[in-house]
Length: 98
Image (cartoon, rainbow, N blue to C red; front, side, top):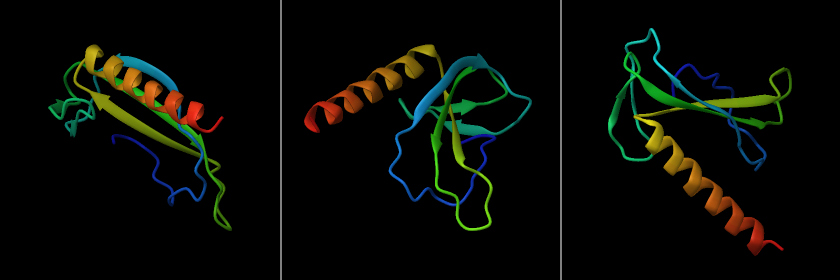
């Protein structure tokens, strides 16, 4: 994950929300692994970024109530495929719980 705030792990099972999906290139020489295809993603080059967000229960003395994750995908098709796959799994879980 690139440029993400990494507070202590969440104690809740809150679901992640997709905040936005954007094409970008960073001024950062970091390399990430595409969560969909496993290819290497050089953040200096054009890639797609998905921002995830969820509520978290802060530990005593902590102020952060949100947890954020940034995922780097090699291209739009990988980002779309990951989002489609994630949505399908979430729908199946919701259907099973009803």
